[in-house]
Image (cartoon, rainbow, N blue to C red; front, side, top):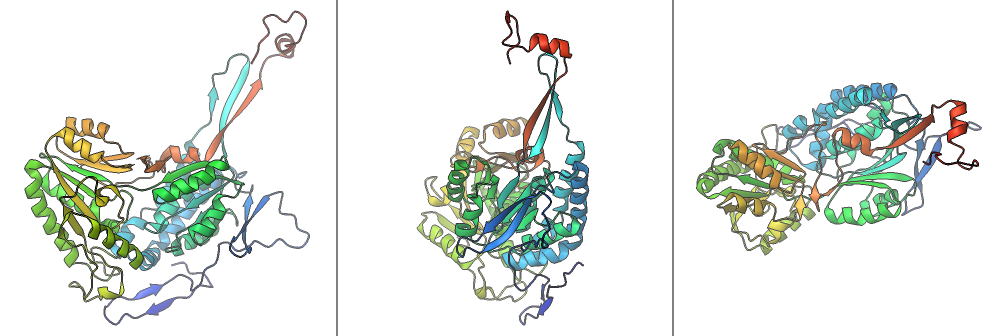
Length: 518
């Protein structure tokens, strides 16, 4: 286990449960890295140095160095990313505990999720070794080769729900492409991202190439995004935040990727395998306490399977609630939402809805049936199921970002697709059917950037991830993400002989008919 010299390892005994909180992180964090000192008289090697300033105090937070990483050989960057994957792999158990403590999510979820993160680093390391430039078929005696070159300095704003997962998804292609990266993690869950920056430097990423600046979005985030030297901004946030930041990014003529809100439909047809559909719906709706942009918040069930589906689904939901407990208990099924403020917002949305609450709907108090954990001190909310909600209802239209689902029945395929598309969002969706023709047909009609069939919320570094409509712009993952962090550069070489060049390229020669233009 890798521990830094200035870290403190604290063991806090919890009187009401047999689980211990082991804090491997520092007691206090500032920006990372701190300003890199330059010895007296020492030149910074011709690197461009960009100061980042706290707009609230005028204090210089750190220096971003641009140049040393972008000019390094592709093979060198690939090796460093591979090494970083191994460093991250070794620290997954402790990082999972930190994630659980800062988000309230269950340790079981986070161990499973974080164990996959090295795949993103390995994928982009491999892509660097195999991604090739090309020769454009330019007319004439010209050799036109096209390469991908870094953008420069890029900014990333990451959320609280998957702090390290979403950060690594963005950081990996940005570093692979040769950029310097400034990350503003959520102020609610910044610890693992700060720890990752330390790991990156340990693996060989030069100091100043990856910087993490904790702070609020309205101050630190806005200041980073509006900096004129930032050439790309990549955010995961709510749609209103995306629209607001998009205006700033557009004014600077910088590139923009935004993974925004979602209201994912699960369309379950009569011929679906019942057990698979119920289990899939439960996972889609309640993993991460429903705090994901592709959370299955709208269950759309066909008539003939509706009653049997609901019977089994409600049994599953009650089982999830009954086994909630200390998030560090590996047997606990579901953790908290991120804060009491967020919980209050959820309760307010539910109270103003005209739907019928079948299960849940109110904050949890008292002791856990699983392990005696006291729910009263935390922001615990039970898995909640609501029916008879009109499609104009706020619960149908707006992202609640919690363990709350609305259920609606439909008769025909056309009606099911119409209900699925009755939303301003279009990030994820899933279809449950054993009819192969229907699966392809309905997937083509659903307005979502990601459409799963007989599964939900499956993610891979090679699979593009992003939304349609108000769910955002651009894509994470895959070759598309790597190319979004770079730009094409054409180099055009005249291969004609000197004699031919003198003859053909003298546009203003006397008697210049037939000369080449362009």
